[in-house]
Length: 167
Image 1 (cartoon, one colour):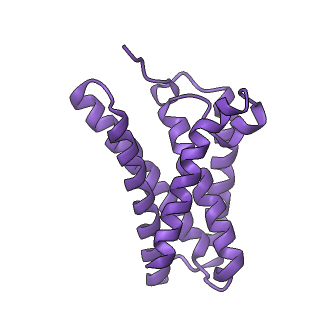
Image 2 (tube, rainbow, N blue to C red; image 1 turned 90 degrees about the vertical axis):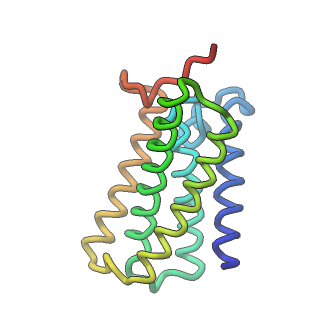
């Protein structure tokens, strides 16, 4: 339980810092690779992805090297959390017709809980322990990292990459 609270606080705190870091550094392109460069949904997914991967890397090297399904659990946890962010955000804004910062923050914190719970459940159930599952999960993390870096500065013309219009 303590490690889950610590994970929640670290991932949440780092994600909040990454929300502002790009502007705080004068829009430094290197910082933009791993922090939000605008208010689009895509960039907000990065605020979960980056701290979750960094936290998980430390967790792996400090105490989880012997858990065969650690990286598949992390990957599926991240994907589940990203799905929660996009589903909840587009559902409530579609209903209301506008977005509310408090609700967006709440969704972010819910997504961290989803990440932690999904990861822990997969590890506990000892699923996805084959070497292929580890390789596929690490490939997914690497591809997502590259897409976050590239699409932050070269976004496709899709709604998820467009910052919301504030009236």
